[in-house]
Amino acid sequence: MNKEYRSLLIKLSRDNRRTIVKMQHYLETCYINEVVYEDMMCDLAGMALECQERGEKFENSIGTDYKSFCRSLAVNAKKQTFPERFFDVLKWIVYFDGIIIPLLYVLYAIFGFTRPILDGLTLTAPAGQLLMYFSVATCMVLGFFIAKRFTYHAQTLVIFTYMAAVILVFLLTDFLGEALLGDMTLSVSLIAWGIVIGALLIICYLSRRLIATNIAYKSKK
Image 1 (cartoon, rainbow, N blue to C red):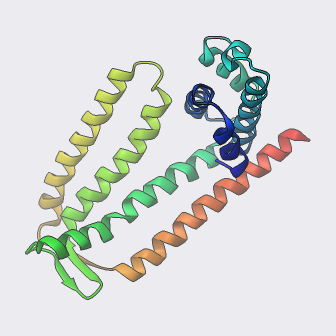
Image 2: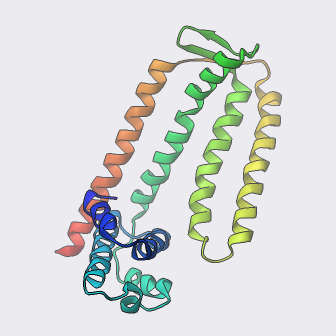
Image 3: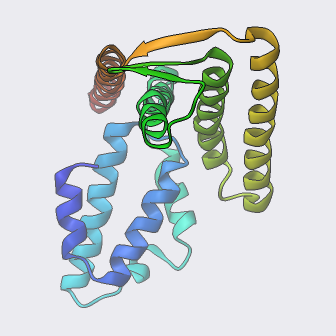
């Protein structure tokens, strides 16, 4: 979220800030275009601040059911396109998969596991184990985006399904990794890994932002 929005939040009372944050989280599930969404949240925070300065409650302006108010805003708002969603999901997959190698390197260095080998800044680990870690991390990210879409519907069922899917992927990939890859190992340089992951994150962010900005500006013409 941009600086203007954060500066407005600081000026709001705790109750108004809580209401705005609830609306923010709910509108996130509506997959509104990123640029349009940021402008919308700035407008809402500005409305809350105006009400606060007049000594009025922000809830009185939007009604007691903030979800209905948000839905009415989202109906006519420009939605995210497939490329926007794709690069958003890809960004988080790259991020979570990217921290696995450095995290394993630190864990192996601290606890001195016997199977992986550390040679300077190079990590050598079982391919089956790495497959399991990457599969679980990817499943967690994809599951999060799917679960977020249905968070306001059947929360208990969604969360249970999400956790069950992650556990199932863990068990399957742990078994298949050992069965298919056996004792195969992979060596990864932390420096090369960091450069590749950093470059991919920048590409994902810039691509999503450029697409969102282009679509948002087109909608205003």
